[in-house]
Amino acid sequence: MMNRVTLWDLILQTVQEIRLRWKQKAGKKDPGKEPMMGRKAAAVLILILLFVLGIVYYIYFPAITTMSIQMWKMILAIIIVLMAVSLAADGFGKGYVTLRSRIMIGIAVVTAVVFGIGWLFSSPILSASKYADLMEVEEKEFVDDIEETDDIRDIALMDTQSAAVIGQRAVGSLSNVVSQYEVSDDYSQIDLNGTPMKVAPLEYAGFFKWFNNKQEGIPGYIMVDPLENEARYVELETPIKYSMSAYFGKYLPRHLRFHYPTAVFEGYYFEIDEDGNPYYICPVLKANAGLFGAKDVEGVVICDPCSGDTEYYDVADIPRWVDHAFDGDLMLQKYLWKGTLSGGFINSIIGNKGCTKPSEDYGYRVADGDLWLYTGVTSVNGDQSNVAFVMMNGRTGKANYYPVVGCDESSAMSAAEGQIQHLNYTASFPALININDQPTFIMALKDKSQLVKMYAMVNIQKYNIVATGTSPREVLSQYREMMAEEGIVDDSGEEITSRNKKKITVIDIQYITMDGETYIYLRDEEDILYKKKIADDETLMLIQTGDHIEAEYEEHENKIYDLISWK
View 1 (tube, rainbow, N blue to C red):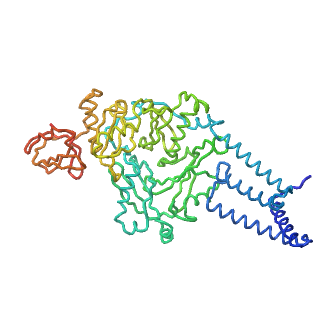
View 2 (view 1 turned 180 degrees about the vertical axis):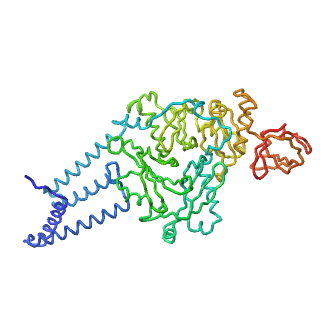
View 3 (view 1 turned 30 degrees about the horizontal axis):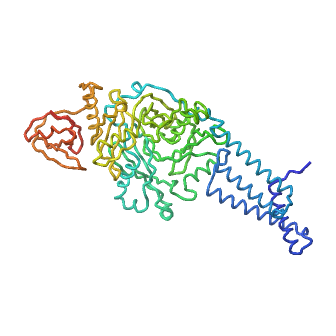
């Protein structure tokens, strides 16, 4: 019976044969008298190999699991190196191959075959149904499930670029902060006690800033209110020590890898709980097809970046305040698999019967105490219309499907930009809301500096109805008036019960031009200003000083109110 050959024996034999050949060429005819030197050399070689592997693992820290492609690459690299050393010891390709080298070649071939078979069964070619079944979608009626919007307080209309501009201003005046730290570009959209909010941690501004401040840590984070276009810096009692900008053992992914060596992490998302305490939410993926195909979230690791404490939760046990267990890009990918592979892989390539795909981007909406991701659904033929909408829960992965036919997001954005093309504003990705049982897109309009200047609403089914305004309340009023003019809804009193009305006496009138638009400012006897864009209502030019009018308006704390309409 052949004795079992270990890795140590292989390396030992390799070193000894290299030494034998070298000594034979040097004229030493009796090399067998120095076996202990060979063992010492082998031990040194083993230690060097382990040291190099340790450094490589510390730098790249792959997950020690068959689900990690990076781990497979490292295994193949190690086997190839050992095989090359063994073949070199056999005479550098001169025709003599020892049993040891044949075993190494066999191990390399078997590893490559196993990897290839695993990859094949991981692909949609053989596992289309496993990909398609990752997401369960429940079909619902838009009018019944999406509550009508009277006051736009749960729609996150600010994108990350705008949040970054406002957030940077919040720390710009803090000299002790801005000189050593910078605001992360990775803003997370969260639901904070029923209100949409964007949060981002401070980061070390480079290696030397980390080295000088690693003992003090990161002192706080930025919180941006997308509804009020305001940001504030939150200073922590206990600073953040583990972050994405730290180094060595304080680098968050490395810290988590050493605690969870087999976990396949999908991302690291900064969030805060209801009390404002910072955490990193780190989804853990599991392969559902082959070795590493059809990955989906099986749980999350929640890390306290101040202390480094971690805890793992299965999907069913994730705390309610968590919003990023399922990443938006992963959810889009899962719906793409659902829409294209439900009829099989061949159908997704040829025929495309019943195949649909999600939009290339998504928005957010706070509902039922959770953060939901929203995206449109269109046919794979790439036309400019949606056949439905999907809302996906970022904590549970649940998805709701709403069959609503209308314009897609890019068409709505173009329609909104066309209304104010003279201002060169750009539209952010729209959100889906219900206005008088009408599916409606609402979006922010930004200037070149990425600041929100206006808002727009577009009727999804009749996207010639486009309303714009300087505030969400103003654009909502304009939109309802336009729908009434089109005969879509009745202009009833029920629609305007949330508006403020009162009779005022106009004691002063001023006209001011901003961003190419002229606004009228009316001052009443209580020294309150009412402003409105002339282009929205040219009859404003008829108002004169001393007139008594009935004003419908939206209040603001600075006593400059948005004039919605007047009589």
